[in-house]
Image (cartoon, rainbow, N blue to C red; front, top):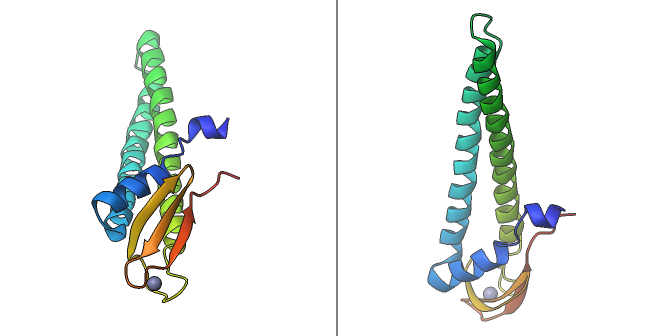
Length: 140
Ligand SMILES: [Zn+2]
């Protein structure tokens, strides 16, 4: 079930990011996307608070309150999904970044893509050409 909810795209994103740009730019893009989800969650939280006030407003007709309640339910679901995506992208970026240190010379983030294989990317150090695999974070 978890795999259906979380598409395994991190290794694909890393591969295309390393092909087109640098690791640092890929990491920056992941942070940007992660924080966009956080901003979305925060804005929706404000909307949820306003909708809660509208739902419990005694002067609002019942039929209108049901409409606000439906909107409130949708806003809560989207906010939870956005918050979940924030943590997902943040944790994935951190886990991949922890694997971006060259095992031979110790340089961080100077990678080139060798090949992408499913949920891992084989990369090589741009300084010393040492090769290793960066594995996509797992759900469990
Ligand atoms: Zn190296």
